[in-house]
Image 1 (cartoon, helix red, strand yellow):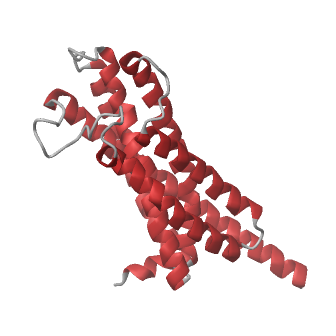
Image 2 (spheres, rainbow, N blue to C red):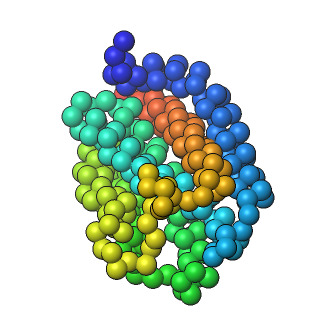
Length: 242
């Protein structure tokens, strides 16, 4: 069995129909458990107080904002190289989800930054690159809507995705590139001295798993919708020609 079999719309629809209820159920369990555990059953931090609990929304959404763009990059490259329509439609379906994740990361970051930094916004390298990434998401979505021919739209948005990937990388590694930034380092780290305490770490892992599963659920739903919309347009075009 080859992975390229799932690039066939019929195969994708069959497989996603079976997987969707399971993924959605696991997403709900992980999110509810992680958020309730994190917000109601973890102590306040001795430095940050109750504001530390924003990590259960901020960290998973920030991780997803970057990784969704990477997923869009991979699927766009598959389209540009192998011309599989499902991959292009999956990238299109992921964009609004990534845009919302980026917005959540920006808003929750501002809520945390106001008491910690004394300001809602600072032109910190990571914050700035995240804002630019958000604008790239908007531009990507607008480009899809602006072009009538879906193949041409997929080609141009694929190129835009390549350019935007620079800012996805900057968002991830900005703290390492510019040490003068206000933004703290990684919350999750292999270095025990930098990693957060286990009391926050375990519910955070559940929240991250929940966000990942939620993303998969939404992308499957939206990709299925895009495939149906494409089929509908093809049928309408045939009727007009008949």
